Length: 600
DNA sequence: GATTATAGCGCG
DNA sequence: AAAGCGCGCTATAATC
Image 1 (cartoon, rainbow, N blue to C red):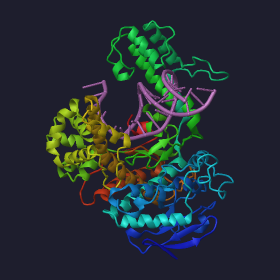
Image 2 (cartoon, rainbow, N blue to C red):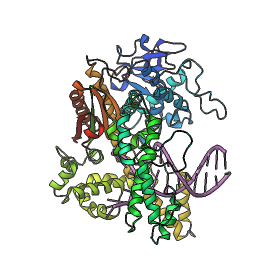
Image 3 (tube, chains in turn purple, red, orange):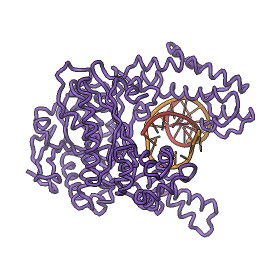
Image 4 (tube, rainbow, N blue to C red):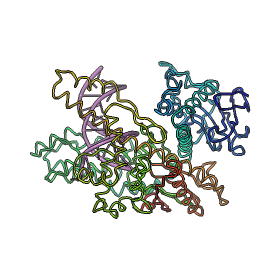
């Protein structure tokens, strides 16, 4: 028995592949804890998974360990990800006085662990890393050049647990921080599981979409042809060249295009689509069409398909905590930017369905809860929030509500948004007051914090320098206006941070609840599908996009899964806002493809 | 020749 | 028709 912070630890097995399991004194504040130094090839023999589902696996980095377990078909119910927890708690204004905040930056402060690339690559093929499991951990002993921080061993993990426990217990909001850490950790599990399961991808359908829009695929066999554009793109390029009387124009070269436009007498200052749309010239239409197709071709065309889809699955890497606000990032294939054009290629396996859910007006609803704005919460209760604003006579039309609300969240100061902002401010003074306060704090260079305790970064040294320059008595007007612009920009960032960040917390709770509930549904007794173990007979998450998720479920279980997704959203709202009632309605659709389910 | 920066556009 | 926030990715330009 060892004691670390308020957590009692019990050694289950030790040595190479050490697993340390433990049970805390009880209560939500002292969850059972397991610390894993190294994970054995299959952890099932240790009996800490499944049968003892109350255990909370604790490890340095979910993204490093969990893919190996999943490759063995092992699912972990709960975990504490020390790296994610460290970054959250250390950076949180709620815990600013703790010793944790003063330890020197080390391995736990890295955004992503160096060896993750290899782990991810192996998981892409659904195979465990052969022969490396008990080898020297490559993360600390990096091949050559820069050594970097050393990966923590079990003792370092235990020390980290103690520091975290102390910091959270002594923080301004221990309950919120615990929920945040648990939700972030659960998100890491979900992210690894989604990578493992993959998005079911219909390559033939994707190819049909591309061929229909782009025309015949250019021959790629043999050597590369210099001007090997798909048929439709080549035709449009020819039209643009003809219209601009520029026979050698490369439509992919921005300076080239800009020069040609100006030579044609057009007042273009850039080649951005929205600017081109305002110009009147026969070259514009084919140029815009070309750019649209070019984007599809380069970002999500055949090359993308070849590179990112294998075995009927798209397996992006989700980067939990990869965005300052707490949203996830992604790497590999642009998972969070899948254009609508190709979403029909996301297709359930035979005998399976997709449940596609997205949270309606998530950010404004979160703001209502965050600011305890009862009138705003009421406007969204049981209905579309923007329609509710029309019904309450805040604005005349739904579109005004939407554009005005977005302006409030982002700090818009111009156009239609600014025009309706005063009416929204009058109707919802608490909500608007909350984001205004966040903006003012940011303008003063202060930190702002989400509901559960994720704090914004401080502006960098360059920011301070610009501010200092402007205070110089001999500062130019230019320097002053630069400083002012920068101040306002940081205010817009912190204004949005509290809302986007708290919305990300809601989404983490949602996805955590969904994965827990889906697993509880149990195994379907039909034949196994094409999903890898442990999900072959179970509904499972396959895609997550900020306020939207997709579940892949055996056909007969799709409706049950959809119900769980809805209930999970309500639960997420309760977890964040407790007794303050805010509705979080979802649009949920069950269908064969992502596009169909979205009504597109 | 290899790297880094930029413009532009996809998503929420 | 876009602005105001947050991202990732690609092709090309610029730079070493």
